[in-house]
Image (cartoon, rainbow, N blue to C red; front, side, top):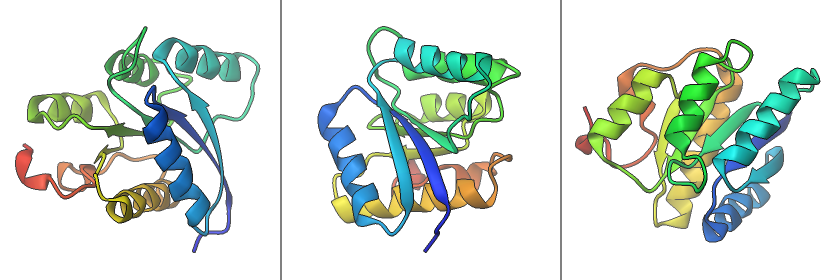
Length: 157
């Protein structure tokens, strides 16, 4: 398994989903520090503060789409249009699987898309796979074929 110290930012307002995410990380062999924010405004404040104060950005952002105050779509657009943040790998982490939305998110520039599986083992596999992919190639977005990291590929494109 990977042994590098990894810094992950999770933006999700659902406490149960945050708990499951942290449980996945705890059970993995990864050395990961997870920081949580529960809405889009807090997320953008944190990222903007990091770049303004020349702090280290996370290795990856796991971003829920349906959050209060500012949703994940708006945050993703802000991140990908800000020259200081656009290189940040963003993994969408959502229950939504509407193909037109997934296509839009791909076009905006998210790296990967995880539709939150109900099965814990599938969730664990998807999250660890996403982290591995980001660590091995943080700069580039995959092709559409490699964008979705879940069992629902037949719903897309």
